[in-house]
Image (cartoon, rainbow, N blue to C red; front, side, top):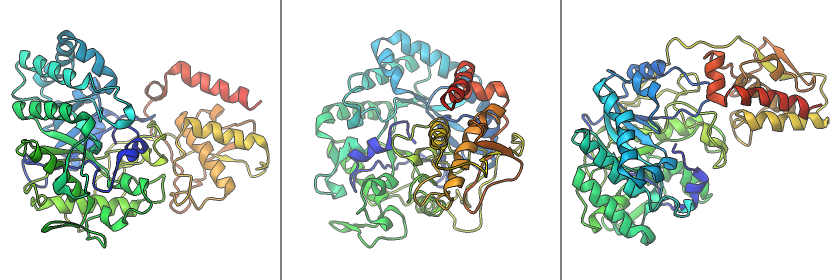
Length: 488
């Protein structure tokens, strides 16, 4: 998902204003891309993930930053790449051409020469969210222009296009009908300038679609309207009846482009998906229903009423990310179609079929020992140290599975504590000091997983790599010391 807070998105989302887009430009109608996020404590090696992409037939990948190891691993893979620039870099890139030239030289030119198929540079990520309070309004477009100029200077502008992934709150329909779509009034002029830039350079309009966020934000949102099997609450717009959120939002954007004279600008679904944990509506069944429904919906290449043709899209996301902020909601860490270790969560046919096709797991994954950390049977739940320990563990590890109608909702109180302890223990590479909690916890070789609740064993990425990814050597040691002192 995008780096921006989903709760933040939700404030600006209406039933017909969730980012959606489709467009021409796929090499084949069933081609599909995926977002590769890297906010994990224990990331799979980049080479392993690239092989995972290839094994499953992904031919496009969208990155949120220009990480050298990842771009290097994509060399010669045949996978098309959209490489991102974080929002916190926009001010520097907007200030002058030299910074943009340096960025292109470091993150595009060299990699293209080495055989990385970079097709797009995504300048910023949803920078015009209303909840950003205008922070990036004055820097996004200048940064795009400077990156474009740098690509021209490098002789890459014909191959690599500059765009910006946008949230649906940049456009809206005052009547709720897609045909009345237009860009948001307070940024209307800016949006036209950006769309003119996209049209003149041949770049696509990229936006992110999240029917789940509409459902999360509005308890009255019709559940079936989020999926693709028909709705009991369709939207009728003249002679067109919209049976799902995707088509309606897509055409709201298309109408906005047409209204302002840019009906031929291609559009790309930058992010689309459904989370699997952390909320009552975030589960495996709904995620498969949505993603398979979406893939089947676009497989025929018919498009939507206002924009027939193939849909160019990137699923969100590839792998769960246990380091993402949960400020938007606990579901933020569980958008992946694969678990943290590259194992598939559910059967999914990327070609759009509804048969028995399934995803292929990552190969050659190494795990830590089969050891878990659990609450001692003799521990007293009324002991204040128990509550303090759980708060501490969940503050540094992923406890999103604990909650109402989540995957671990069936655990009893002691099970919840054990889950929190184990999550922290695995994050800390099964360090013995991370399974003590002032004598409350003990390590075990008996898997405490039960039902749908999985107590994980982390990936063995090597101590140095895991520490570096999580928070740095000094920070890990400080966390262990702080835990000890807190529980004394």
